[in-house]
Image 1 (cartoon, rainbow, N blue to C red):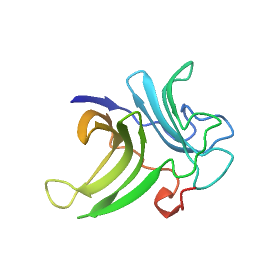
Image 2 (cartoon, one colour):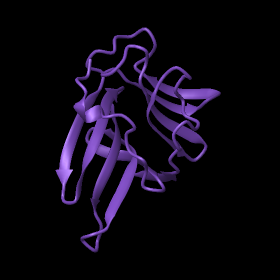
Image 3 (cartoon, rainbow, N blue to C red):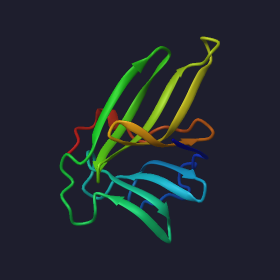
Length: 147
């Protein structure tokens, strides 16, 4: 299993979203960026992008392909917080962007963690974590009805 850390981007900072697209999630993974963008179609429609601004490595769904039911959103209550995930499948892999808040080891202090989990056949092949714990999703995706 590969693991990496990343630093979260502050609001309005670099992401892989176009200038007219709201940034739903973004964080750096070394020299690369993980982004969830909200295209012009509006709430309930997302676009996942990974790579560098000048060298996009992955975009899902591909431009011109149907976006209906491309993503699943789930929430999980945790003691002292919860977890929200946005996931999709492509080429035998499951990509899950997540934001988690839970009680720390002392039972009182909240711990924050955001990142990207990649699985193949149910096994984790990569976990890319935002180093500072993260800002979470910038829009209420758990309340959306995905199109």
